[in-house]
Image (cartoon, rainbow, N blue to C red; front, side, top):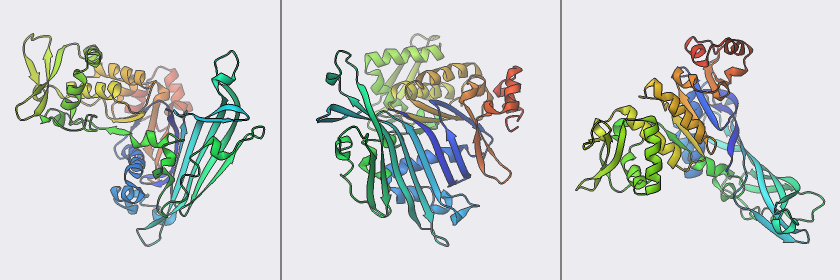
Length: 420
């Protein structure tokens, strides 16, 4: 699975035009109403398109008038482009006169645009295009003695949706006698779409691109300790809810596995040294409640209702980072209710996990910046016209001078010097 390398947006909420490159670990900072929530809304909107369809996704944003920028309105199209660095999990194997060949997708970009109908709340699809790059590899049994796959060519595939009619264009290396159906068997499976349907909604995205896999499952966590402290029904989702409300159920399932229980216990004790044991209590009404035993008391378990909000948040964070299979996760204010000393450990965990999945964090807290690498930080601010802009402060020459003189990003942020 790959990561989202770049997002480009036009005429979306507080953004007029946005181009932002993303890494495995990204920390977004900015003042209130700067546009952090609007940036996160991009992912919500794309996820809703995949799960519920374009019409419903727009409705869930409040309609086209709340999807687009208020000042721009219908005068310009809304558009989004996503570039994903991706190696597909499934190989397409071709066996003909060329021997055994495999197709590997290496990079995918997807672009669509909506044209708003003037004076109305309707829209039409102005553009819809999937573009991917691929490598052709010689199979293991065809490469004598090495056991490795040999790259023998590369090409591109473009799929275009024009008012519901699909066309595909494929660039095939000239020295290979191959048909596009051999390289990508799925290209002719879908001939047409609904006039208001996007390629993003079709199985085409679940086979070659990987973008749908990333966006469909993205979770945007904003933990509410008050919800996590309540007893919950025994039945429910086994995956942690975005507000952490089913924490007890997720913990119950995790603690039933000895290996996971041991790993979880080691992780939480590394951050919260006072934790001696954890368990989930089951009541006669088939509800569950998370409980914790401290090292200060060898016999008594404290119910979740008596635990600190910080303890609940750290528990939820560990579950999210280490026991949730998500290629992309967004965590809003992960440092909330956590002592400044422990924020360093929380950031260390997130950086460790980001080696295997993409993480986006939003925060107001300068302590988070203190323990983040300057290159991980992205700053959101409004310009004079009120449009949100995103920059990487460490690239600013004046900011570089401050950093070279041992001023940290946290100090520059609190002194409002990142907008230089």
